[in-house]
Each structure stands twice: as C-alpha cells, then as structure tokens.
Picture (cartoon, rainbow, N blue to C red):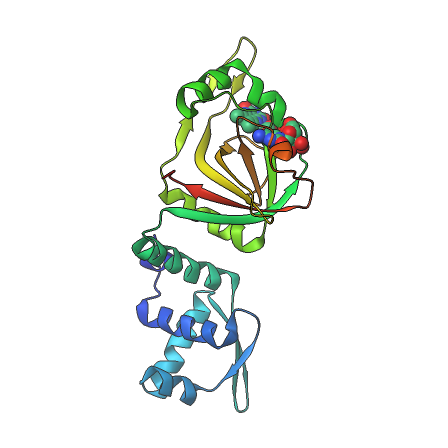
Length: 235
Ligand SMILES: Cc1cc2nc3c(=O)[nH]c(=O)nc-3n(C[C@H](O)[C@H](O)[C@H](O)COP(=O)(O)O)c2cc1C
Ligand SMILES: Nc1ccn([C@@H]2O[C@H](COP(=O)(O)OP(=O)(O)O)[C@@H](O)[C@H]2O)c(=O)n1
Ligand SMILES: [Mg+2]
C-alpha cells in the first residue's frame, strides 16, 4: 500500500510532488516559483506554499529559497512514496501477468550447485516444478530499473519451496516463479524458474534461475551476456 495512507501527507501534497517530479525534481534541483506552481495547481499562492512546506516537513522534498523563487528536489523518501503509488497503478492496469527483467549473466559464489543438489530441495523441485534441476543457479545481475520492477513479482503466484532440517542444521525456504529466458540472439528457453532463497548472500540486484538444463550451454551464455527473464504464468 502507498505510504501516504499513514502519513499527514494527503493527495493534494502528493499531486504537487508528482508535478515537481515531472518537472525534473527526481534528477536534481529544479527552480520553481510559488506563482508558477499555483497556476499549475489552479490554487492560490498561499495554498501552493503550504503544500510545499508540508512536503518538506515530511522529508519528501528539499527546498532552498532564493530571491526569485526556490530550488526544490524530491528526496529519496519522496521517490519511494511516488514509486509506491506507481506500483498501485501498475497492479490496477497491468492485466499482463508477466514481469520482464533484464540483466547480464554473472558468476556467483559457486554455492548454488550445492543447495540445488540437496535431497530435501530436490524432492520438492521434482514434485512442484516437475523436474530435477541442473545443479546450480544461473545468476543474473539485474539492471537498475529491473531491480525496482522485481517487486512487481509479488503480485504473481509463486511456487513455494519449504524449509527443512537435516541431522545437523536447518535449511531455509525459497520461492520460485515460472520464467522464460531470452538472449540477444533471440534464442528462447521456456522451462526455467526464478528461485529466491530466503537465506541468501545476494542482494535484490541478483536474480537466480534454475532449469532442467545447463543454460550456459543451451543458450551459449557467458558472463556479461545480456538476457531478458520474463517471469509469470506459462501460457
Ligand atoms: C534452494 C536454495 C536454498 C538455499 N538455502 C540456503 C540456506 O538455508 N542457508 C544459506 O545460507 N543459504 C542458502 N541458499 C543460498 C546460497 O547460499 C547462495 O546465497 C545463493 O544460492 C547464491 O549462490 P551462487 O552465488 O553460488 O549462485 C540457498 C540457495 C538455494 C538455491
Ligand atoms: N540451470 C543452470 C544453472 C546453473 N548454471 C551455471 O552452472 C554453474 C554452477 O552454478 P552455481 O550456482 O553453483 O554457480 P555460480 O552461480 O555461483 O557461479 C554456474 O556457472 C551457473 O551459471 C547454468 O548454466 N544453468
Ligand atoms: Mg548460481
């Protein structure tokens, strides 16, 4: 849900924040005057000024007042607030239940192989994904916009992999989503899944993919090759 629901900031202020972002306020300082803003909002100077003050108090906007106006920039919190709205609208209008993520193939820590081969996981892959995966995870270093878009996966239906215990330790759960991999040469591999282990050494920018085949061989992939991972239901 959007952040504004819980804060003192209302939709009027949010509309101003969006306007300032559209004028360049996400990239850095933009210069505005209260009368220009008032015009755009069809409101009085006083109203425009009050909304700016509220945005500043809520740490959504930084301001520097000068003689003939003010320099404003949307803060990180401000960007997150706008982004939360964006996610709400995406959920409303994106009927396509696919999320396309882009990135480059990369080598990880060589641990994927060990985990994928463990009998406690292997049994579940066979039952729930329908195959025994190649031992390993293909790691994809996601482009910045895809790291953000990754959160849209939350609206898709995951295949859960449960945590389990061996004699001497516990193993964490993971979630899988059906995925199709496409290379820049236009080669397509359809039977893959993304896998996100709850316990991982990687951050959000790393996407791990499993498949019955060794994808590096099937798709002639090497480190730094570009791939598109389309996550969502199979047709
Ligand atoms: C199915 C699965 C389960 C995992 N479970 C655990 C775990 O219980 N504890 C842990 O520290 N890491 C766990 N990992 C994460 C790995 O340690 C590692 O962070 C990740 O898979 C990346 O490995 P890579 O860089 O070798 O590809 C798991 C990974 C997979 C694929
Ligand atoms: N379906 C898969 C899974 C892993 N792999 C690759 O197989 C190797 C072993 O996987 P891993 O997860 O243990 O290794 P890293 O991802 O840590 O490099 C890596 O080179 C992966 O990129 C693959 O080509 N296709
Ligand atoms: Mg891996």
